[in-house]
Length: 616
Picture (cartoon, rainbow, N blue to C red):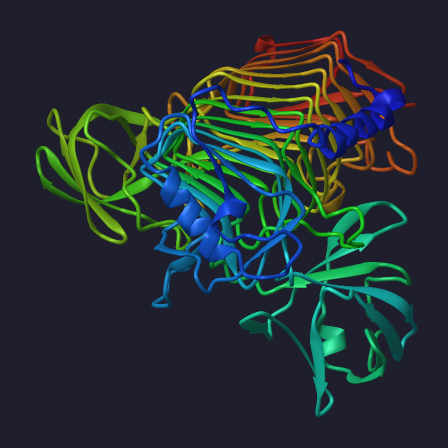
């Protein structure tokens, strides 16, 4: 379906119905002869508010060893507490703080070494208590999770609405799910087994349905008293406030110590009709797994909850996967970070032990503790300054010698230029990606981040008011160390509504921005990107920035001036730096001034366009 502004509301209503109603049908009947395990038979009683964690542990153990088994949940609501639940030490990409605190997680549904299992949720709402992982699939294959919803009794996000505010006083209406206490004039937010004194704050404006970075500090410095249940009155200095009456302030402790769901060393994993109403930590993280499909997966607060936020950070995060990643008919709404992030991980060479052995190190403080290379994997040696490939090899053996270091044995001598300081990218664990028919909204960061060498198709989606780039194609070996280059990307028939407002005019709707800091003789990082048939309904941000790209087509798109925006669009809508073989043609626009293309360090002869070109 081609989505434009006129029918985007119908699109949202359609997929909301799919996610809300589509899971209400009868559970699929198991194939005759297949084992069906009823969770109720192991002591789980729906709507009893009793701890069903021991029953889940027993029922999943009963599924072990059976062929094509189905674990059937009872419907209604079941509650899971850490007491009696699965426990496992987990090191999760982008989600493990570098400190000495325990990395043991409590897990609602743990599958380890299982195959051919379906968890039929039967529209059950699973309510988690404390900081728990909803599900973890480890060393498993051919697993389906469907028709199930997860939420937290006390989300680790707190939310307050600004009931009134002036320069010296403010009143906050606290959401009933956000537990707090006022003691000796101090405000403390707490939960089941945790409390926080750090407040990473993002403001939601109901008037614009947009999210912005903010601060809770004016309230923490002010005198406070409780004037009624869930109503707090503050006296202080609010002259520099960035919030208004009816805005919602959402805040969390930024320490990452968990994830919403975890898929690791697994294959052929399917999520269908799954609703994640809140996730603590990094959302659903898929790590070194193969063939993952998410159909009708919703990351969104329950409609009757009155909450704004559904995810502490990302919604769908993929690190070092391969095969095919499919995201189809999904919704991500109300996040403190990116809806989708697909990447690999650069490890840095710290020592050349001999001509076939190198020591490698995880470089980012939230990513470590798991094997990033396996025997038989193909690798590339990467110059972190230019992001260019300096040579290739195959892994004969790789050992995780401690939580942050690996030693790799190669099938050939290390290239002469590949010494300490260079990085290694795993070429084998790179997926193809399809993202279609989905809605991404209510995030103050990006929409989709993609860095993979294999084929990428992003089509028929709505990106609504992402605070930064709706689509970012990066690649870096100096900050997050998220690899790598793209070689075949198609972005078609999507609608981009008022994206990039948080960092306008620098936050282009689409950004092709590898973090290469030095210019090599051959300096192109990304190649073969086609953007066609899309609608750009602009607010303030320009359309596209491309750096170090060879082969970019931006043809037959529609560029519109959005309501209330466009003041900054008199700057060039397109920015090209160090690019070649560019086509920007046959696009339509209703902007009242000429659309321009600005080029820097780019051979004008390789830029084919029917727009006006400007240069420094």
